[in-house]
Each structure stands twice: as structure tokens, then as C-alpha cells.
Image (cartoon, rainbow, N blue to C red; front, side, top):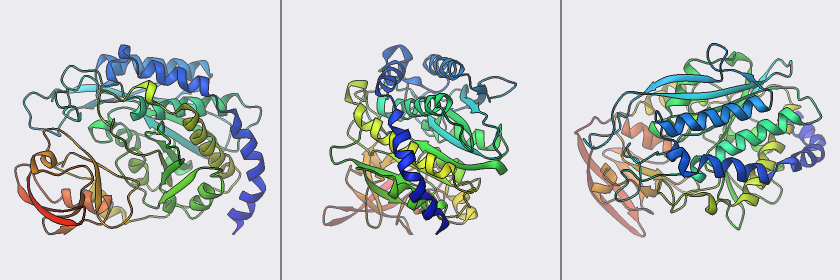
Length: 408
């Protein structure tokens, strides 16, 4: 109750403050990061290196503190694509890097704001939905230049406003998310701040395609008692679809597994996902401004509250097991779907789901003997299989239940 009373008092102030989000800045950041010059920002490749330099130069311009390793902006880590047996896919060892900055307000606790800046590069990692992806630039304007632009704009918003928040801020742009949340996992295992003084983490992944009816998916609201109220009461004209889970196919999962409250902002899947047509001209820039204003309102309201308690949405032991997946299906799950099962929004070429005949729109109800009710049970089921094994997958296609054979 104390959270809601404080929220009502703060809402008018935070609504006014959030109007400072600048659309021109978003256009610049996404236009640059999603340009052909950056070659799709593949983790460990030259385009990622150029992107990291652009991000750290902007952080430096804002006079933030470097919070990577050894007094730098960067946190390097090794990556290797282990998600495929295809001999045409690059499985070489590479080095990727997170870009990390800090706004020190002299506060006790810190709010973490992040997004992944890597994408599919030139289609060499086997995660493109293009029929023949090799050598083609995947610019990833929505996935996830839109989220990175959000981090940069919120960094500017908090570093240059005329007030001093009651929290410090850590701004992180992760790499190798597309290879399995590797950058965020590495950061949470090698943090550059005291996680005991981290309040909560905000993750933005694909926030550039707000629909005409202004639907916004917000995950993680069950990871602390106050979060659902904060998100709903600052929504403005946005239509919020709440997801209580602290896990999903993006970087907030890594922080949830370290017992931190998280929020995940997502404007929804679309037909351009993991294809070469995910370009800047398809971004809804006024819509992204609305999303970022909402995120700023949530953060501004939370800034005046006591440190948020963590609430697990599943036991850590169970979730840790579910994330140790040794196989992949190669599907893009829908985060906006209601009901039981895992709805499929996209299917990757050459992956087990595609070979089995799974289609976009199918709802996966069971993998082998494991019933699928949501993304957590889906991840948990995949953790039970090894490469080379085969099983049956039950899917709901329209009104018909179909059983397909899949080999991992």
C-alpha cells in the first residue's frame, strides 16, 4: 500500500519529466547502428567493434564513468557458436564485448538499464530466418538497435537533466545475446558493481515497432510486488500486456537468475524478425518515444521508493536447470500470446523445428513427455534432450492437434 500511495504522489511529476525523450536522437542512433557500415553487428566481428566504439563514444560525451574492466568502457569475453552442427556456419572462437557506463549520483543503490547491441551480422551464425542468409547484411534496426537507442537516450535523459535522482545508474549494452544471452550472462557472473546494492534491471529488446493500437508487452512484473502497479499506473495511452515471469529469451533473464527484480519491454514480434528487411525505415519512431517516456515514468516513480524486494516467479534451482539447454528448436516465441502452450512467431531455416514442419502460428503443447505451458516449461523441456536425439512434438494448428517428429 505504501508503494501505491507514493506512486500517486509522484506520477504527475514523472509524467512531465518523461516528455524530454528526444525523437531526433533515436533516429540518429538507430540510423547509424542499423546502417550497412556496421554490417549487422555480428558478435565478434568488425561490425560489432564499430558499434562498441560508437556506444562508448556517446557514453563518454555524456561524461559518464567507464565501468567495464580495468577502467575502460569494455568488458570482453569469449564466444563460440555451439547452437548448430551445420558445417557452413562459423563455429570459430571469437571475442565479443559488453559496453558499460555508470552515472554516480552518490546514492546507495543502483538501477541497471540495458539492451543487447549485437545482431546477426552477415548471416554466418545460423540464426537468420532468410532462406539464403550467408553474406547478407542483417541490419537489425528493431532487433536490437531500437533497444540500444533506448539505453543511450535514457543515459542522456538521466545524465543531463536538472535534478539528481536517488539512485545511481548502470547502463549496459550487451553483446552475443543472439548466441544465447552470452554477454548478460558473462556480466552477471563478473559484475562491475555490487549486486547487493542493485535495485532492479530494465531490459529493452525490440521496442521500435509499437503498433497502431499501442500494445506494449512488459515482462518481469512478478519479480517484485510493486512492479505491476508501477507499470500500469504510468501507462498513459499505452495498452500494457503484463507478464509476471522473470525469464524469457532476452538479457533480463540473466539478472533474474541472480535474484534481481527485472522489467522487460517489448513491442512485439513481426514478420521482419531475423531477416534482412529489419531496417531503419520500418521503425515507428514516435511510438518508440512513447515507450521510452513510459519507461522513464516507471523509473522516475521507482526512484523515490525504498529498494524493491525480490520475488521469485519460479524456484532458482528449477530456472537454472531450464536454462542449461543442450539443444535448440529454432523458433521465435510469441510474448503476447495468451493461453497454454508456446505460440511460435517465427521458425529458423535449417533448424529442428523447420525440418519437423513446425509453422509460425503453431502452439507447441508438448515435447516428448513434457507438457509445455509457457516459455519456462519449454526451456525446461529442451534441457532434457541431447544433440542427436529425436522425439515427438505436439502442436495446435488452428483447431487441429498435430504430432510431428523432431530430431535435435
